Image (cartoon, rainbow, N blue to C red; front, side, top):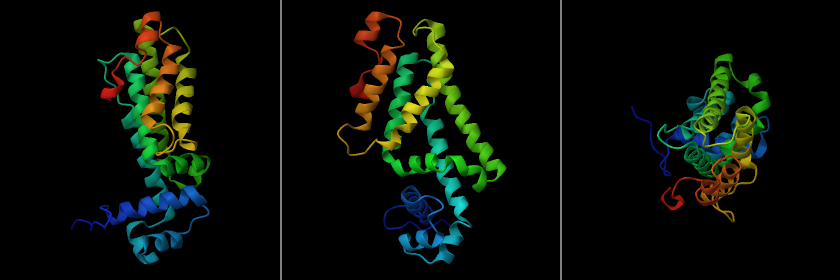
Length: 215
């Protein structure tokens, strides 16, 4: 039997996850009880436990959703130039983070403690996704260096810096701020790529390699 859909169009489990994400972001994982989640969503605690047997399982679903999103955002089109790919990575990441700031906040706030809350298999899954994120970014930079599109650089260091720059944006990125996530992605990508692109004419005239209005 399919799960009932709530008035906001989400399944009950999705609603619980969304409410818990907001509570964890505001109060921390330790500072949020299952009673708090039940009260916020308007259910008794027994019903909440029907959907999630433990608070740790809610946190894992938050982590898994964030990790899967990030890997998906970094899918690579091998026919695109390295600079186009970097821009698309940045746009997808920032737009996605802006759409779910609380999830990103929980991911990084609770990061130092996940070995306490998760099983070994769950931790391994998250670490594997994080490694894939790093590898995708590093490989695109290496591709740009190998093709002569980018200056020679330490792709390891640059990939780590890029990940910190983009994923750390949850601290200040706001969905309805002065600049949209799309506009910030253009600024970030332009600044980064103008430091990487070897061809001066490309660096000045078309560092993103795409029509921004069409993305």
